[in-house]
Amino acid sequence: MGIINVGGKGIVTADGKKFELEKLSCLYLGKGTKKVTFASVSKKSPAIFYILSSPAHAVYPATVLTKNRPLLLN
Image (cartoon, rainbow, N blue to C red; front, top):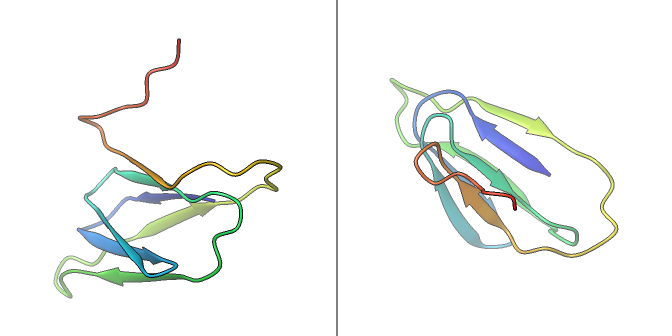
């Protein structure tokens, strides 16, 4: 599952682990993640989460990517 925050600061909790997402940050959650919840840090500037999903065939760790720390592919 891919989650992109296009709003204010938000928190995604996946299987009890919290991930803070600034605007335009994204989170990858791998195969086997069971429980996911979403929250905004501020009611005045709520997070807006865009969610993408596709079947997974392998397990990869949860990873946060930001515009200041992109994923570089070789």
